Image (cartoon, rainbow, N blue to C red; front, side, top):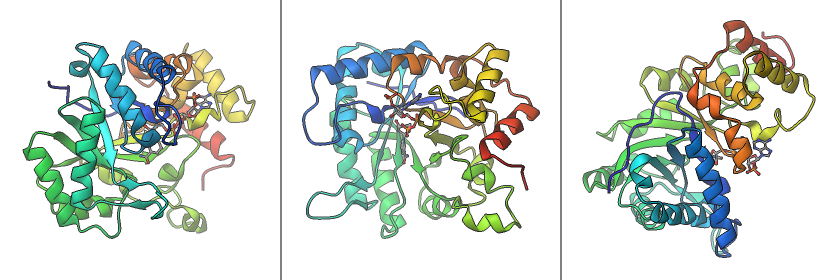
Length: 314
Ligand SMILES: NC(=O)c1ccc[n+]([C@@H]2O[C@H](COP(=O)([O-])OP(=O)(O)OC[C@H]3O[C@@H](n4cnc5c(N)ncnc54)[C@H](OP(=O)(O)O)[C@@H]3O)[C@@H](O)[C@H]2O)c1
């Protein structure tokens, strides 16, 4: 069985964290499968072909219900890119939650994800978070082995800085092709970092300055988690940002959700939004972010940024 392998700059991704039922170890139900099926159908219907998972989402149940859908829908696997992540270990009564990028953990996690997803290859594997204790040589050796065995096609990272990517890449022959970070009109540190240089406010900005430029320059796809800002601007609130989104949507004959996603895609790095709502009607509201090029002028893009930050740029 083979899957598509391409991820492209700006291409929206469907985030599967909301699928699979509860976050505890209670097994998923038929209703959870139906919920996942409706979400995946809506995502496919608007043209999304990349699906984002993690071993930990709903304690493995997000991958498991998705695997169930792949098993049932003949030919679906060949039409989509399956991305998953490893490297976070949840608290388990003996240990606190921790990060684990040791080779042995990665190999075990991938084996389990492959089984849950009912597939024989993962198209893109992201290292979920940096593990300060992991030896990059050991991590890289595991990734190389997975690649050589044909179990994973491409690799990327998540929540990592430019320096952390370099540190790992220095030990790895296969290129890192993606970095998934929290980026949206609501979480703006990634863009603020670039203009706060030389200002006192820079001290409060936690984003690793230069990471966006680093990824852009090296064709490392930037994926934005939290891209819809959890509905903060599109759930009927009457904030100035929500109002502006709705005015722009009317002018461009689209939805406020699309404007929100276009704001990321319009950046020269062509940020790929990860869409995390599981409600079919909310997924369908994102259609134009998949089917149309972002239609925001320079002025409109800044207008959105300045309105969301609630004050002028430095
Ligand atoms: N790499 C990482 O560390 C990391 C971290 C978090 C997430 N992710 C990935 O990114 C994806 C998206 O992240 P996210 O879920 O935090 O962000 P999001 O897409 O901004 O928000 C979606 C979440 O907000 C809820 N929501 C409430 N009102 C909403 C509205 N009006 N419109 C849209 N959503 C609304 C959704 O619930 P309903 O389902 O009921 O709509 C869902 O739980 C995840 O699925 C996952 O794949 C990655």
